[in-house]
Image 1 (tube, rainbow, N blue to C red):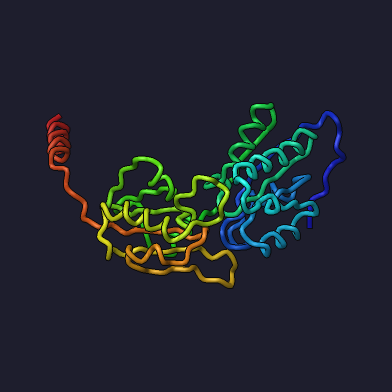
Image 2: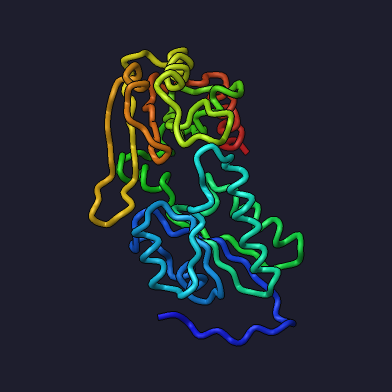
Length: 274
């Protein structure tokens, strides 16, 4: 059941809210995100699954899917800019607009950040409401506490395009490995040869027999998370989509920083004497 909306007037200012649906259908939607959806005049949906989109349509009479703007051979940045313009067109028309995105609307999601930036620059109210992300699910499903050894997160292609420093004493989380090495932004996947380049880079810090965890969060209540454990050398041949995340557990123990510990000990002694 949707909320009744007052008639649109010329003096009414448009508003924008970008909210997260969470990863698992129904169970991750927060009450505040639901409120933004129900009170909107127009809802735009950038979701991971057709079933999730159908579920959203039960909450609001005007849900417009953003998925048709994707196309093979079309730059994803062109698609994302179209999403921004679609939402802003309705905001400028004085409507309350809600963009609903799977997971967290601000994680691996260019359009929500840009739409909010544009809306605020033009004087409109704009808000981002967080959601449960794939990262949140990963910690729970794999039993990882990022505070124990530390955790680095990289978009996989960034490791190839830029000089980044990897710390093998902590967890390494690589996102969008299925697209690693794509400079065109026009493909939905790259192949084994591209993943081999990634493995060659990782082998500078990890042995080839080091365990790699391939993970995908559940998106429907009837599903279980996908968890596969393979050796690093097997990663090029593994089946991966853009939804899969690759985790490398620590490969070396933490090393004591003796100089820093002595400095802190000296401070403790000074504090005790004071």
